Image 1 (tube, rainbow, N blue to C red):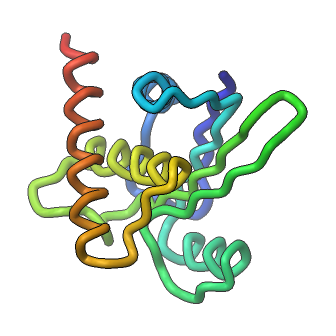
Image 2: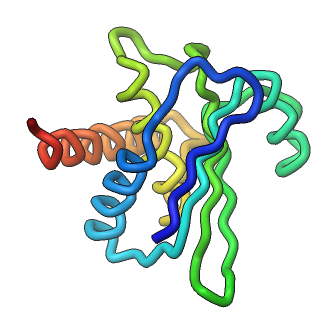
Length: 140
């Protein structure tokens, strides 16, 4: 599995390749999904708006953009994550936020959406469950 963490603009938060790889492994195991590679691009708000406009023709800031493509070697994902505190929840650490956004983007890959309030609550519950699994697997 190929994992890269890239930066575009001036994101405040970061995540390690190992954390992404471990989160992806948990997700793929639980959802029985095969992913060849993932690029996590941490952005600031200006860069996120630029990507959202270019990729989806949406001219606004967003927490995560998920792009998926099939390659001859398998499925490859790109997650553009707003790495600033704009979407940070109350009492949430930057690490939990970035991990939540990784899981959020991956949940879009398996078909979950967050257009309605009910869908948002459902996705948030699933993000919390995956975060819990991640932290249980990574106890010191």
